Image (cartoon, rainbow, N blue to C red; front, side, top):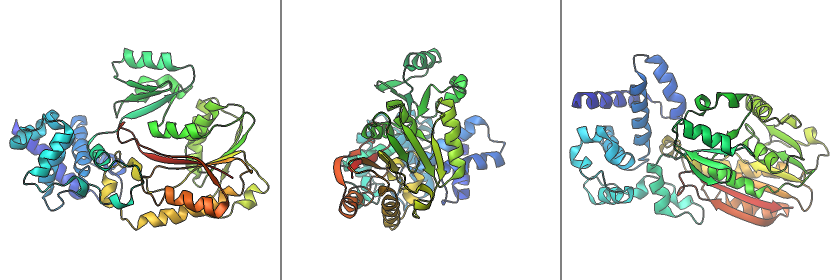
Length: 391
């Protein structure tokens, strides 16, 4: 039996050596598997799990060989569920039935020189209110998949999930948490024609509570991407005018498809590079609300892409801060007086969050109406920052 797990270890080491470490695993692995068609679906699933778990160690125990680090990662991420660990490291597996917090404590006191704070080397940049140990512990748990159900669709969606034996938990009236990797397109093929829900992280849904649109408002989703927040805005208040913009034409094409499936037909769309003054394209536009989901480090989402922990360099934080300030300055002048700029990042770094809010308040005569670091790390979700600023 051990040969099976030894083969899995050899496969892991081979893929790890091939991994360029300059791209995300979610982009690298599909290409690798296409080139190695001899790997069956079970082999691919196991290899993916081992790669992701390995990177959840971040920078911890970096002096150990990869196979030893993998054993520690399996111990923390899988516990007693890891037959791989049971076969190849039985002396560590003997403690695998401990709760995660106690497994961490065990490693901290063992000969491996494991320190939880080594996992994530950017702790001095964290926003106020982040509970350090809880935040770091969360990296050893796979985040959930969250959906926001369209109004009036909850009963049908939940019935379909139950019918197919999919476990879920309701987090609020419109949000369900599902196991990561749930094949929603297989369960709801009919929803491709008429959407019943949106895949949207729990914290992103919570950020939508800061929108508060009024009937007949004119809103601008300035960095709209594929339109998740705009759809949330429409579901709060369907009688609005909306402009969506992004620098990427292809992602706005995805937005068009998503809006069509949701039955939304009336909106404006522009391809804009907001690092430049958009006045030439917006002329005398004035908005009752602007959503600025700013480009950021994404550090609040690294539980889904743990390889980014070891790829990231702290100097990049200030690069993103400068970009965010530039974009905010170019959009805020199109906001009517007394109206909100909703500034959002999926970052946990204070330079991108509180420091930028302080800058915007000072530089553009804005007032903080509300502001929150939305902690997802204790709910198997992403963490985000949102501030509602009034001009």
